[in-house]
Image (cartoon, rainbow, N blue to C red; front, side, top):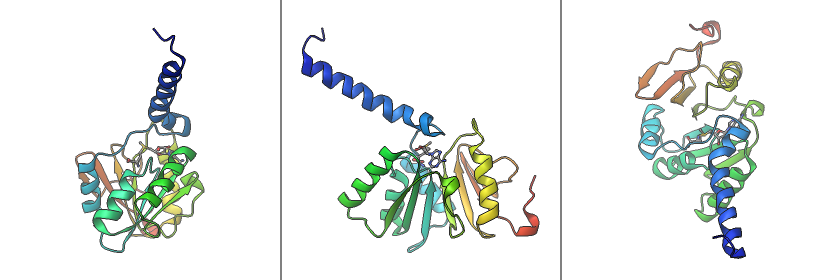
Length: 182
Ligand SMILES: C[S@@+](CC[C@H](N)C(=O)[O-])C[C@H]1O[C@@H](n2cnc3c(N)ncnc32)[C@H](O)[C@@H]1O
């Protein structure tokens, strides 16, 4: 059936691309699944994204969230992504969509990124690993009181959401003296 070499190579390449798309997240952590278009609007609404705001997607995948929010809400968007291939794709799309200056991707682990200027952020991670616990601790240490974070699907442990809308949880970084929450 696969005796035709070009077809065999094509099918193998396709299988590798599909496998990478779905499994790469597990290599880098948190799995990979994009947030749906409808939820992106709900995230923007919860975070009250306005013209000129700066929005961060920590673990931005292929950048769907940052591109949509930049275009629809005229916000400055920054994605942080650990997977080099996804970062390469986002950089390509930034050029193609002519969004240089409005969308930026940082390649690396968000646990190594300075979060002190992050005021509105989104995460879609996993509770199967300690990543959300570590990120929550870092957010409390570095982000200013009042900064807001929406998490999709998964709740942060030891942090009470201020608002819940379906599978979206809105958190507000507390004042220094209130940083221990139940
Ligand atoms: C479930 S996907 C969500 C993608 C995107 N935020 C969205 O909602 O469409 C999680 C992404 O986080 C990335 N990721 C996981 N751990 C990370 C880390 N420590 N630093 C940066 N990116 C990370 C994964 O590579 C994956 O692309």
